[in-house]
Image 1 (cartoon, each protein chain N blue to C red):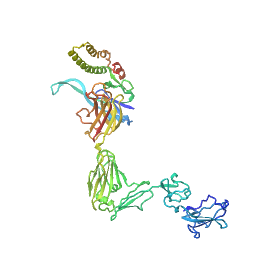
Image 2: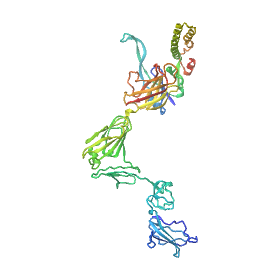
Image 3: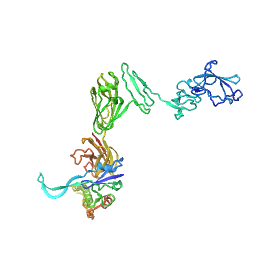
Image 4: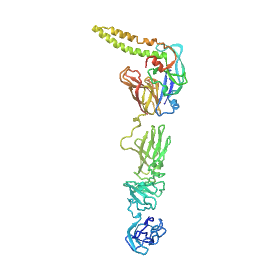
Length: 411
Length: 177
Protein backbone atom coordinates (compact mmCIF):
# COMPACT_ATOMS: atom_id res chain seq x y z
CA UNK A 1 0.00 0.00 0.00
CA UNK A 2 1.00 3.63 -0.26
CA UNK A 3 -0.30 7.05 0.73
CA UNK A 4 -2.42 8.36 -2.12
CA UNK A 5 -2.92 12.02 -1.09
CA UNK A 6 -0.48 14.28 0.73
CA UNK A 7 -2.04 14.94 4.15
CA UNK A 8 -0.16 18.13 4.78
CA UNK A 9 -0.79 19.97 1.57
CA UNK A 10 -3.95 22.06 1.40
CA UNK A 11 -6.32 21.50 -1.47
CA UNK A 12 -7.44 24.84 -2.90
CA UNK A 13 -10.49 25.89 -4.89
CA UNK A 14 -10.42 27.96 -8.06
CA UNK A 15 -10.04 31.16 -6.00
CA UNK A 16 -7.03 29.86 -4.10
CA UNK A 17 -8.97 29.35 -0.93
CA UNK A 18 -8.88 26.05 1.00
CA UNK A 19 -11.44 23.66 -0.41
CA UNK A 20 -13.26 23.16 2.89
CA UNK A 21 -15.23 19.91 3.08
CA UNK A 22 -14.37 19.12 -0.54
CA UNK A 23 -14.95 15.58 -1.81
CA UNK A 24 -12.50 13.10 -3.23
CA UNK A 25 -13.97 10.22 -5.18
CA UNK A 26 -11.77 7.16 -5.67
CA UNK A 27 -12.42 4.88 -8.66
CA UNK A 28 -10.57 2.07 -10.31
CA UNK A 29 -8.03 3.56 -12.67
CA UNK A 30 -9.62 4.09 -16.07
CA UNK A 31 -13.13 4.14 -14.65
CA UNK A 32 -15.33 6.90 -13.25
CA UNK A 33 -18.01 4.58 -11.99
CA UNK A 34 -16.34 1.62 -10.28
CA UNK A 35 -15.39 2.78 -6.85
CA UNK A 36 -12.24 1.48 -5.19
CA UNK A 37 -11.65 1.33 -1.46
CA UNK A 38 -9.14 3.45 0.42
CA UNK A 39 -8.05 3.19 4.02
CA UNK A 40 -7.21 5.44 6.96
CA UNK A 41 -4.20 3.33 7.97
CA UNK A 42 -1.21 1.89 6.19
CA UNK A 43 -2.19 -1.63 7.20
CA UNK A 44 -5.46 -1.13 5.30
CA UNK A 45 -7.68 -2.18 8.18
CA UNK A 46 -9.77 0.99 8.58
CA UNK A 47 -11.79 1.68 5.51
CA UNK A 48 -12.43 5.30 4.52
CA UNK A 49 -15.69 6.67 3.27
CA UNK A 50 -15.80 7.09 -0.48
CA UNK A 51 -15.81 9.90 -1.28
CA UNK A 52 -13.32 11.04 1.31
CA UNK A 53 -14.30 14.37 2.86
CA UNK A 54 -11.55 17.02 2.96
CA UNK A 55 -11.14 18.88 6.24
CA UNK A 56 -12.29 22.42 6.92
CA UNK A 57 -8.77 23.66 6.32
CA UNK A 58 -8.60 21.98 2.93
CA UNK A 59 -6.27 19.21 4.15
CA UNK A 60 -6.95 15.62 3.33
CA UNK A 61 -7.13 12.94 6.05
CA UNK A 62 -5.05 9.78 5.76
CA UNK A 63 -5.77 7.99 2.54
CA UNK A 64 -3.93 4.75 1.79
CA UNK A 65 -4.50 2.37 -1.01
CA UNK A 66 -3.02 -0.34 -3.12
CA UNK A 67 -2.52 -0.05 -6.82
CA UNK A 68 -3.69 2.83 -8.98
CA UNK A 69 -6.84 4.98 -8.82
CA UNK A 70 -8.81 7.47 -10.83
CA UNK A 71 -9.36 10.33 -8.36
CA UNK A 72 -11.99 13.04 -8.90
CA UNK A 73 -12.00 16.20 -6.78
CA UNK A 74 -15.31 17.96 -6.18
CA UNK A 75 -16.62 20.80 -4.07
CA UNK A 76 -18.78 20.08 -1.06
CA UNK A 77 -21.68 20.79 -3.41
CA UNK A 78 -20.54 18.05 -5.76
CA UNK A 79 -19.12 20.27 -8.51
CA UNK A 80 -16.17 18.54 -10.18
CA UNK A 81 -12.96 20.54 -10.06
CA UNK A 82 -10.20 18.10 -11.09
CA UNK A 83 -9.70 14.52 -12.19
CA UNK A 84 -6.37 12.65 -12.03
CA UNK A 85 -5.76 9.17 -13.37
CA UNK A 86 -3.67 7.30 -12.44
CA UNK A 87 -2.97 8.09 -8.86
CA UNK A 88 -1.30 5.25 -7.09
CA UNK A 89 1.17 3.83 -4.68
CA UNK A 90 4.52 2.33 -5.34
CA UNK A 91 3.05 -1.01 -6.29
CA UNK A 92 2.31 0.66 -9.53
CA UNK A 93 6.08 0.90 -10.01
CA UNK A 94 8.05 -1.10 -12.46
CA UNK A 95 10.53 -3.17 -10.49
CA UNK A 96 13.70 -1.19 -10.18
CA UNK A 97 12.27 2.03 -11.60
CA UNK A 98 14.18 5.21 -10.85
CA UNK A 99 13.54 6.58 -7.38
CA UNK A 100 11.19 9.59 -7.29
CA UNK A 101 11.36 11.99 -4.37
CA UNK A 102 7.62 12.65 -4.32
CA UNK A 103 6.63 8.99 -4.28
CA UNK A 104 5.74 7.31 -1.02
CA UNK A 105 7.28 3.85 -1.08
CA UNK A 106 6.22 0.83 0.86
CA UNK A 107 8.31 -1.88 2.43
CA UNK A 108 9.86 -4.25 -0.15
CA UNK A 109 9.53 -1.71 -2.97
CA UNK A 110 12.55 -1.83 -5.26
CA UNK A 111 13.97 1.29 -6.90
CA UNK A 112 17.14 2.35 -8.64
CA UNK A 113 19.26 5.27 -7.48
CA UNK A 114 22.83 6.34 -8.13
CA UNK A 115 23.52 3.25 -10.21
CA UNK A 116 22.39 0.78 -7.56
CA UNK A 117 19.17 -0.97 -6.59
CA UNK A 118 17.53 -0.41 -3.24
CA UNK A 119 14.75 -2.04 -1.27
CA UNK A 120 12.51 -0.01 0.97
CA UNK A 121 12.43 -1.33 4.53
CA UNK A 122 9.66 0.96 5.76
CA UNK A 123 6.21 2.00 4.74
CA UNK A 124 5.45 5.65 3.95
CA UNK A 125 9.01 5.95 2.73
CA UNK A 126 9.00 9.30 0.97
CA UNK A 127 11.71 11.86 0.35
CA UNK A 128 14.50 9.65 1.63
CA UNK A 129 16.98 9.31 -1.20
CA UNK A 130 18.27 5.71 -1.08
CA UNK A 131 21.88 6.43 -1.94
CA UNK A 132 22.10 9.01 0.85
CA UNK A 133 20.14 7.02 3.39
CA UNK A 134 21.73 5.54 6.51
CA UNK A 135 20.00 2.22 6.05
CA UNK A 136 16.98 3.03 8.17
CA UNK A 137 14.72 3.40 5.11
CA UNK A 138 16.56 1.66 2.30
CA UNK A 139 18.89 -1.27 1.98
CA UNK A 140 21.12 -1.76 -1.01
CA UNK A 141 20.20 -4.78 -3.09
CA UNK A 142 23.03 -7.00 -4.25
CA UNK A 143 22.46 -9.62 -6.87
CA UNK A 144 24.08 -13.02 -6.82
CA UNK A 145 24.84 -14.49 -10.19
CA UNK A 146 24.72 -18.23 -10.22
CA UNK A 147 25.51 -19.95 -13.45
CA UNK A 148 24.57 -23.57 -13.61
CA UNK A 149 24.26 -25.98 -16.41
CA UNK A 150 22.93 -29.15 -14.99
CA UNK A 151 22.58 -28.24 -11.35
CA UNK A 152 19.62 -26.54 -9.77
CA UNK A 153 20.37 -24.54 -6.67
CA UNK A 154 17.57 -23.65 -4.35
CA UNK A 155 17.20 -22.53 -0.79
CA UNK A 156 15.99 -25.28 1.46
CA UNK A 157 13.19 -24.89 3.89
CA UNK A 158 15.71 -25.29 6.66
CA UNK A 159 17.06 -21.84 5.95
CA UNK A 160 16.75 -19.56 8.93
CA UNK A 161 17.40 -15.92 9.56
CA UNK A 162 21.07 -16.40 10.20
CA UNK A 163 21.91 -19.37 8.08
CA UNK A 164 21.44 -20.49 4.58
CA UNK A 165 21.50 -24.03 3.36
CA UNK A 166 21.96 -24.99 -0.23
CA UNK A 167 21.28 -28.24 -1.87
CA UNK A 168 22.09 -29.20 -5.33
CA UNK A 169 20.29 -32.03 -7.01
CA UNK A 170 21.61 -34.12 -9.78
CA UNK A 171 19.19 -35.66 -12.16
CA UNK A 172 18.96 -39.33 -11.54
CA UNK A 173 20.49 -39.17 -8.12
CA UNK A 174 20.06 -37.77 -4.69
CA UNK A 175 23.50 -36.21 -4.31
CA UNK A 176 23.31 -33.42 -1.83
CA UNK A 177 25.70 -31.13 -0.12
CA UNK A 178 24.90 -28.56 2.46
CA UNK A 179 26.72 -25.39 3.29
CA UNK A 180 25.86 -23.50 6.39
CA UNK A 181 26.93 -20.23 7.82
CA UNK A 182 26.49 -18.10 10.89
CA UNK A 183 25.97 -14.44 11.63
CA UNK A 184 24.69 -13.72 8.19
CA UNK A 185 27.82 -14.80 6.35
CA UNK A 186 27.47 -17.19 3.53
CA UNK A 187 30.32 -19.62 3.40
CA UNK A 188 30.38 -22.43 0.95
CA UNK A 189 33.44 -23.80 2.75
CA UNK A 190 33.48 -24.55 6.44
CA UNK A 191 36.94 -24.35 7.95
CA UNK A 192 38.02 -26.99 10.45
CA UNK A 193 41.06 -26.11 12.53
CA UNK A 194 43.06 -29.25 13.10
CA UNK A 195 45.18 -29.69 16.19
CA UNK A 196 48.89 -30.28 15.85
CA UNK A 197 48.49 -34.04 15.82
CA UNK A 198 47.69 -36.95 13.61
CA UNK A 199 43.94 -37.28 13.18
CA UNK A 200 41.15 -38.69 11.09
CA UNK A 201 39.35 -36.29 8.78
CA UNK A 202 35.74 -37.28 9.22
CA UNK A 203 33.34 -37.51 6.32
CA UNK A 204 31.33 -34.58 7.66
CA UNK A 205 34.45 -32.44 7.89
CA UNK A 206 35.59 -33.45 4.41
CA UNK A 207 32.29 -32.41 2.90
CA UNK A 208 32.56 -29.17 4.85
CA UNK A 209 35.55 -28.34 2.77
CA UNK A 210 38.65 -26.82 4.40
CA UNK A 211 41.19 -27.74 7.08
CA UNK A 212 43.86 -25.56 8.61
CA UNK A 213 46.81 -26.93 10.52
CA UNK A 214 50.07 -25.54 11.89
CA UNK A 215 52.24 -28.62 12.47
CA UNK A 216 55.49 -28.53 14.41
CA UNK A 217 56.60 -31.84 12.97
CA UNK A 218 55.45 -33.88 9.99
CA UNK A 219 51.83 -35.00 10.50
CA UNK A 220 49.59 -37.62 8.93
CA UNK A 221 45.89 -36.94 8.48
CA UNK A 222 43.91 -40.05 7.71
CA UNK A 223 40.80 -39.94 5.57
CA UNK A 224 37.48 -41.36 6.69
CA UNK A 225 36.42 -44.60 5.09
CA UNK A 226 34.71 -44.63 1.73
CA UNK A 227 31.63 -46.12 3.37
CA UNK A 228 31.36 -43.22 5.79
CA UNK A 229 31.94 -40.65 3.06
CA UNK A 230 29.29 -42.15 0.83
CA UNK A 231 26.92 -42.44 3.76
CA UNK A 232 27.45 -38.79 4.64
CA UNK A 233 26.61 -37.87 1.07
CA UNK A 234 23.22 -39.47 1.54
CA UNK A 235 23.22 -41.76 -1.41
CA UNK A 236 26.07 -40.67 -3.58
CA UNK A 237 26.09 -41.97 -7.11
CA UNK A 238 28.98 -42.92 -9.32
CA UNK A 239 30.86 -39.89 -10.58
CA UNK A 240 29.51 -37.46 -8.05
CA UNK A 241 32.25 -35.59 -6.28
CA UNK A 242 33.27 -32.76 -3.97
CA UNK A 243 36.51 -31.08 -3.04
CA UNK A 244 38.28 -30.28 0.19
CA UNK A 245 41.33 -28.17 0.90
CA UNK A 246 44.23 -28.58 3.29
CA UNK A 247 45.91 -25.36 4.41
CA UNK A 248 49.28 -26.04 6.01
CA UNK A 249 50.68 -22.97 7.77
CA UNK A 250 54.07 -24.41 8.61
CA UNK A 251 57.06 -25.95 6.90
CA UNK A 252 56.40 -29.50 8.00
CA UNK A 253 54.73 -32.07 5.77
CA UNK A 254 51.08 -32.90 6.19
CA UNK A 255 50.37 -36.18 4.46
CA UNK A 256 46.89 -37.40 3.53
CA UNK A 257 46.64 -41.09 4.31
CA UNK A 258 44.19 -43.55 2.83
CA UNK A 259 41.41 -45.52 4.49
CA UNK A 260 39.23 -48.48 3.60
CA UNK A 261 37.72 -48.11 0.17
CA UNK A 262 39.70 -44.94 -0.64
CA UNK A 263 42.09 -44.77 -3.58
CA UNK A 264 44.67 -41.96 -3.50
CA UNK A 265 45.84 -40.39 -6.75
CA UNK A 266 48.78 -37.98 -6.99
CA UNK A 267 50.88 -36.16 -4.43
CA UNK A 268 49.25 -36.36 -1.01
CA UNK A 269 51.79 -34.17 0.78
CA UNK A 270 51.03 -30.56 1.65
CA UNK A 271 53.88 -28.41 2.91
CA UNK A 272 53.68 -24.75 3.92
CA UNK A 273 50.83 -23.94 1.59
CA UNK A 274 47.53 -25.34 0.49
CA UNK A 275 46.28 -28.06 -1.80
CA UNK A 276 42.83 -29.04 -2.95
CA UNK A 277 41.70 -32.61 -3.36
CA UNK A 278 38.68 -33.98 -5.19
CA UNK A 279 36.77 -36.88 -3.67
CA UNK A 280 34.94 -38.84 -6.35
CA UNK A 281 32.49 -41.62 -5.82
CA UNK A 282 33.66 -44.57 -7.92
CA UNK A 283 30.81 -46.89 -7.01
CA UNK A 284 28.62 -47.68 -4.04
CA UNK A 285 31.59 -48.67 -1.86
CA UNK A 286 34.72 -46.89 -3.06
CA UNK A 287 35.91 -43.34 -3.61
CA UNK A 288 39.03 -41.82 -5.11
CA UNK A 289 40.88 -38.80 -3.78
CA UNK A 290 42.82 -36.84 -6.38
CA UNK A 291 44.96 -33.79 -5.90
CA UNK A 292 43.61 -31.11 -8.20
CA UNK A 293 45.88 -28.21 -8.95
CA UNK A 294 45.44 -26.25 -12.12
CA UNK A 295 48.06 -24.07 -13.72
CA UNK A 296 51.70 -24.22 -12.81
CA UNK A 297 52.98 -26.53 -10.13
CA UNK A 298 52.88 -25.07 -6.64
CA UNK A 299 56.03 -23.56 -5.26
CA UNK A 300 57.86 -26.23 -3.36
CA UNK A 301 58.82 -25.20 0.12
CA UNK A 302 62.40 -26.15 -0.62
CA UNK A 303 62.51 -23.45 -3.27
CA UNK A 304 62.03 -20.74 -0.71
CA UNK A 305 64.68 -19.16 1.47
CA UNK A 306 64.38 -20.36 5.05
CA UNK A 307 66.33 -17.42 6.39
CA UNK A 308 68.14 -14.37 5.12
CA UNK A 309 69.80 -11.30 6.52
CA UNK A 310 71.43 -8.11 5.34
CA UNK A 311 73.63 -6.32 7.85
CA UNK A 312 76.25 -3.64 8.14
CA UNK A 313 79.52 -5.04 9.48
CA UNK A 314 81.24 -1.69 9.93
CA UNK A 315 80.97 0.99 12.58
CA UNK A 316 77.95 0.22 14.69
CA UNK A 317 77.18 -3.25 13.41
CA UNK A 318 73.44 -3.49 12.75
CA UNK A 319 70.93 -5.66 10.92
CA UNK A 320 69.18 -3.79 8.13
CA UNK A 321 66.59 -6.43 7.31
CA UNK A 322 66.10 -10.10 7.98
CA UNK A 323 63.80 -13.09 7.83
CA UNK A 324 63.93 -15.90 10.39
CA UNK A 325 67.07 -14.36 11.84
CA UNK A 326 66.86 -13.33 15.47
CA UNK A 327 70.32 -11.78 15.57
CA UNK A 328 73.89 -11.93 14.43
CA UNK A 329 76.82 -12.37 16.74
CA UNK A 330 79.82 -10.16 16.05
CA UNK A 331 82.86 -12.21 17.10
CA UNK A 332 85.55 -10.04 15.58
CA UNK A 333 86.69 -8.44 12.34
CA UNK A 334 84.75 -10.14 9.53
CA UNK A 335 83.72 -12.89 11.95
CA UNK A 336 79.98 -13.35 12.47
CA UNK A 337 77.38 -15.87 13.46
CA UNK A 338 73.87 -15.73 12.02
CA UNK A 339 71.34 -16.97 14.61
CA UNK A 340 68.07 -18.41 13.33
CA UNK A 341 64.75 -17.57 14.94
CA UNK A 342 63.34 -20.99 14.04
CA UNK A 343 65.97 -23.67 13.78
CA UNK A 344 66.51 -25.55 10.55
CA UNK A 345 65.10 -29.07 10.38
CA UNK A 346 68.50 -30.58 9.65
CA UNK A 347 72.11 -29.60 9.08
CA UNK A 348 72.07 -30.27 5.36
CA UNK A 349 71.08 -26.79 4.34
CA UNK A 350 72.68 -24.50 1.78
CA UNK A 351 74.37 -21.20 2.53
CA UNK A 352 75.06 -18.44 0.05
CA UNK A 353 76.10 -14.89 0.55
CA UNK A 354 78.09 -11.89 -0.47
CA UNK A 355 80.03 -9.11 1.18
CA UNK A 356 80.60 -5.60 -0.07
CA UNK A 357 83.81 -3.85 0.95
CA UNK A 358 83.55 -0.62 2.82
CA UNK A 359 86.55 0.80 1.00
CA UNK A 360 88.91 -0.12 -1.82
CA UNK A 361 91.91 0.91 0.26
CA UNK A 362 93.93 -1.45 2.40
CA UNK A 363 95.27 -4.90 1.72
CA UNK A 364 93.69 -7.19 -0.80
CA UNK A 365 91.88 -6.48 -3.99
CA UNK A 366 88.38 -5.22 -4.38
CA UNK A 367 86.75 -8.62 -4.27
CA UNK A 368 85.04 -9.76 -1.10
CA UNK A 369 83.50 -13.10 -0.37
CA UNK A 370 81.78 -15.12 2.29
CA UNK A 371 82.91 -18.43 3.73
CA UNK A 372 80.53 -20.34 5.96
CA UNK A 373 81.69 -22.60 8.75
CA UNK A 374 80.22 -25.42 10.78
CA UNK A 375 79.59 -25.37 14.49
CA UNK A 376 83.23 -24.87 15.44
CA UNK A 377 85.52 -25.63 12.57
CA UNK A 378 85.39 -25.79 8.80
CA UNK A 379 85.10 -29.59 8.91
CA UNK A 380 82.04 -29.58 11.19
CA UNK A 381 78.51 -30.00 9.99
CA UNK A 382 76.34 -26.94 9.99
CA UNK A 383 74.43 -26.19 13.15
CA UNK A 384 70.63 -26.16 12.96
CA UNK A 385 70.45 -23.04 15.13
CA UNK A 386 73.08 -20.82 13.52
CA UNK A 387 75.69 -20.56 10.82
CA UNK A 388 79.11 -19.02 11.23
CA UNK A 389 80.36 -16.88 8.39
CA UNK A 390 83.44 -14.86 7.60
CA UNK A 391 83.65 -11.94 5.22
CA UNK A 392 87.03 -11.90 3.55
CA UNK A 393 89.08 -10.04 1.04
CA UNK A 394 90.51 -11.93 -1.89
CA UNK A 395 93.80 -12.26 0.01
CA UNK A 396 91.81 -14.25 2.62
CA UNK A 397 92.17 -11.54 5.26
CA UNK A 398 89.01 -11.09 7.26
CA UNK A 399 87.41 -7.73 6.66
CA UNK A 400 84.44 -5.80 8.02
CA UNK A 401 82.08 -5.46 5.07
CA UNK A 402 79.64 -2.60 4.76
CA UNK A 403 76.96 -4.93 3.46
CA UNK A 404 76.86 -8.63 4.25
CA UNK A 405 74.03 -10.66 2.73
CA UNK A 406 73.36 -14.27 3.70
CA UNK A 407 70.66 -16.62 2.37
CA UNK A 408 69.79 -20.05 3.72
CA UNK A 409 67.93 -22.73 1.76
CA UNK A 410 67.03 -26.18 2.96
CA UNK A 411 64.73 -28.04 5.29
CA UNK B 1 68.59 -0.36 20.89
CA UNK B 2 70.52 -2.88 22.96
CA UNK B 3 73.35 -5.33 22.45
CA UNK B 4 74.21 -8.50 24.34
CA UNK B 5 77.91 -8.87 25.09
CA UNK B 6 79.75 -11.83 26.52
CA UNK B 7 83.28 -13.17 26.82
CA UNK B 8 83.77 -16.05 24.42
CA UNK B 9 85.93 -19.11 24.98
CA UNK B 10 88.92 -17.37 23.40
CA UNK B 11 88.78 -14.66 26.00
CA UNK B 12 87.56 -12.12 23.46
CA UNK B 13 84.25 -10.38 23.31
CA UNK B 14 81.24 -11.46 21.27
CA UNK B 15 78.43 -9.03 20.60
CA UNK B 16 74.91 -10.19 19.75
CA UNK B 17 73.24 -7.75 17.37
CA UNK B 18 69.43 -8.24 17.48
CA UNK B 19 67.15 -8.06 14.49
CA UNK B 20 65.11 -4.83 14.45
CA UNK B 21 61.92 -6.60 15.60
CA UNK B 22 63.51 -8.08 18.74
CA UNK B 23 62.46 -6.46 22.01
CA UNK B 24 62.95 -9.23 24.57
CA UNK B 25 66.72 -9.25 24.96
CA UNK B 26 66.72 -11.66 27.90
CA UNK B 27 64.87 -14.19 25.76
CA UNK B 28 67.23 -13.60 22.87
CA UNK B 29 70.21 -14.18 25.14
CA UNK B 30 68.85 -17.60 26.05
CA UNK B 31 69.07 -18.72 22.44
CA UNK B 32 72.24 -16.92 21.33
CA UNK B 33 74.64 -16.92 24.26
CA UNK B 34 76.33 -20.34 24.43
CA UNK B 35 75.80 -22.67 27.35
CA UNK B 36 78.74 -23.34 29.72
CA UNK B 37 81.42 -25.25 27.90
CA UNK B 38 84.36 -27.42 28.97
CA UNK B 39 87.61 -26.17 27.49
CA UNK B 40 90.96 -27.98 27.69
CA UNK B 41 93.40 -25.10 27.78
CA UNK B 42 94.79 -24.97 31.34
CA UNK B 43 98.60 -25.68 31.36
CA UNK B 44 99.62 -28.41 33.79
CA UNK B 45 103.39 -28.32 33.44
CA UNK B 46 103.28 -32.00 32.54
CA UNK B 47 104.56 -33.01 29.13
CA UNK B 48 103.94 -36.03 26.94
CA UNK B 49 104.88 -37.31 23.49
CA UNK B 50 102.32 -37.37 20.69
CA UNK B 51 101.96 -39.96 17.91
CA UNK B 52 104.46 -38.06 15.75
CA UNK B 53 107.03 -38.14 18.49
CA UNK B 54 106.61 -34.49 19.31
CA UNK B 55 106.46 -33.28 22.86
CA UNK B 56 103.39 -31.46 24.05
CA UNK B 57 102.12 -30.06 27.29
CA UNK B 58 99.15 -31.81 28.83
CA UNK B 59 96.29 -29.41 29.37
CA UNK B 60 93.67 -29.49 32.10
CA UNK B 61 90.06 -28.56 31.57
CA UNK B 62 88.02 -25.65 32.81
CA UNK B 63 84.37 -24.82 32.49
CA UNK B 64 83.82 -21.57 30.65
CA UNK B 65 80.61 -19.79 31.64
CA UNK B 66 79.40 -17.29 29.09
CA UNK B 67 78.19 -14.57 31.41
CA UNK B 68 76.42 -11.96 29.38
CA UNK B 69 75.39 -8.39 29.85
CA UNK B 70 72.75 -6.39 28.04
CA UNK B 71 74.11 -2.96 27.21
CA UNK B 72 73.05 0.07 25.25
CA UNK B 73 74.38 0.18 21.70
CA UNK B 74 76.02 3.51 22.48
CA UNK B 75 78.51 1.71 24.74
CA UNK B 76 79.90 -0.25 21.78
CA UNK B 77 82.82 1.59 20.06
CA UNK B 78 82.23 2.53 16.43
CA UNK B 79 85.97 2.35 15.73
CA UNK B 80 86.59 -1.32 14.95
CA UNK B 81 90.29 -1.03 14.10
CA UNK B 82 91.13 -2.87 17.33
CA UNK B 83 88.04 -5.11 17.21
CA UNK B 84 89.94 -8.37 17.46
CA UNK B 85 91.38 -7.46 20.85
CA UNK B 86 88.25 -5.96 22.39
CA UNK B 87 87.57 -7.08 25.93
CA UNK B 88 84.65 -6.69 28.24
CA UNK B 89 85.69 -4.14 30.88
CA UNK B 90 83.91 -5.21 34.04
CA UNK B 91 85.90 -2.90 36.26
CA UNK B 92 83.22 -0.24 36.15
CA UNK B 93 79.53 -0.46 36.86
CA UNK B 94 78.86 0.76 33.33
CA UNK B 95 79.36 -1.85 30.68
CA UNK B 96 82.36 -0.80 28.68
CA UNK B 97 84.57 -2.26 26.01
CA UNK B 98 88.29 -1.73 26.17
CA UNK B 99 91.58 -3.27 25.06
CA UNK B 100 94.75 -4.35 26.77
CA UNK B 101 97.52 -1.86 25.99
CA UNK B 102 100.18 -4.49 25.41
CA UNK B 103 97.99 -6.46 23.04
CA UNK B 104 97.04 -3.25 21.23
CA UNK B 105 100.66 -2.29 20.77
CA UNK B 106 101.57 -5.72 19.41
CA UNK B 107 98.59 -5.70 17.06
CA UNK B 108 99.42 -2.32 15.60
CA UNK B 109 103.10 -3.22 15.30
CA UNK B 110 102.25 -6.34 13.34
CA UNK B 111 99.97 -4.35 11.05
CA UNK B 112 102.69 -1.73 10.46
CA UNK B 113 105.19 -4.49 9.72
CA UNK B 114 102.84 -6.09 7.24
CA UNK B 115 102.40 -2.82 5.38
CA UNK B 116 106.14 -2.20 5.54
CA UNK B 117 106.89 -5.57 3.97
CA UNK B 118 104.74 -4.66 0.99
CA UNK B 119 106.47 -1.28 0.64
CA UNK B 120 109.92 -2.87 0.89
CA UNK B 121 109.11 -5.25 -1.95
CA UNK B 122 108.20 -2.30 -4.13
CA UNK B 123 111.45 -0.62 -3.11
CA UNK B 124 113.42 -3.73 -4.05
CA UNK B 125 112.12 -3.47 -7.61
CA UNK B 126 113.23 0.16 -7.76
CA UNK B 127 116.71 -0.86 -6.57
CA UNK B 128 116.89 -3.50 -9.28
CA UNK B 129 115.99 -0.96 -11.97
CA UNK B 130 118.52 1.54 -10.58
CA UNK B 131 121.18 -1.15 -10.57
CA UNK B 132 120.60 -1.92 -14.26
CA UNK B 133 120.58 1.70 -15.31
CA UNK B 134 123.32 2.90 -12.93
CA UNK B 135 120.99 5.50 -11.44
CA UNK B 136 121.51 7.25 -8.12
CA UNK B 137 120.10 5.27 -5.16
CA UNK B 138 120.53 7.71 -2.31
CA UNK B 139 116.83 8.65 -2.38
CA UNK B 140 115.92 4.97 -2.23
CA UNK B 141 118.31 4.49 0.67
CA UNK B 142 116.58 7.23 2.64
CA UNK B 143 113.19 5.71 1.86
CA UNK B 144 114.33 2.29 3.05
CA UNK B 145 115.74 3.74 6.27
CA UNK B 146 112.44 5.52 6.92
CA UNK B 147 110.52 2.29 6.45
CA UNK B 148 112.82 0.36 8.74
CA UNK B 149 112.34 2.98 11.43
CA UNK B 150 108.54 2.94 11.07
CA UNK B 151 108.01 0.79 14.13
CA UNK B 152 110.53 2.57 16.35
CA UNK B 153 108.13 5.28 17.48
CA UNK B 154 105.54 2.71 18.48
CA UNK B 155 108.14 0.57 20.24
CA UNK B 156 109.28 3.58 22.20
CA UNK B 157 105.81 4.22 23.55
CA UNK B 158 105.50 3.22 27.18
CA UNK B 159 102.45 1.04 26.73
CA UNK B 160 103.33 -1.76 29.06
CA UNK B 161 100.31 -1.27 31.24
CA UNK B 162 98.69 -4.61 31.84
CA UNK B 163 95.12 -3.36 32.10
CA UNK B 164 92.11 -2.52 30.01
CA UNK B 165 91.96 0.93 28.53
CA UNK B 166 89.13 2.47 26.56
CA UNK B 167 89.33 1.76 22.84
CA UNK B 168 89.13 5.41 21.86
CA UNK B 169 92.04 6.32 24.09
CA UNK B 170 94.29 3.55 22.84
CA UNK B 171 93.43 4.29 19.22
CA UNK B 172 94.57 7.87 19.63
CA UNK B 173 97.78 6.91 21.39
CA UNK B 174 98.71 4.41 18.70
CA UNK B 175 97.76 6.74 15.89
CA UNK B 176 95.08 4.42 14.58
CA UNK B 177 92.57 7.21 14.25
